[in-house]
Image (cartoon, rainbow, N blue to C red):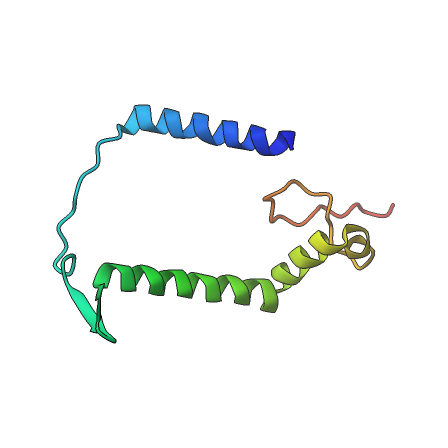
Amino acid sequence: MMSVLLTFAIALVIEGVLGMVYSGTQRRINLPYGADSIGFLGARIPVVQIISFALAAVSLVVLYLVLKKTRFGRALRATIQHPQAAQLVGIAGRRRPGSLRRPQRRSRS
């Protein structure tokens, strides 16, 4: 529980520092399709929301494919589900979080 609070506190500090550095003033960008909407089953849906939904759907599909079909995704899921079993089959789980480098093999001399 303490790590969740610490993570939240760090996020608030980072957000505050970025707000001080880059200011919190919002600027509006007028896009040619910003006010357009499309009719669907009697409802008007803004084009911006359709684009946002499409980008979220594409991101979800890409994440699913990465986690299910790549060696990295399988190793990540194996390490999360059972770290000891993952180490037995050769997946190094003791590395730093976020590190994608392979560990250095020691020479047998």
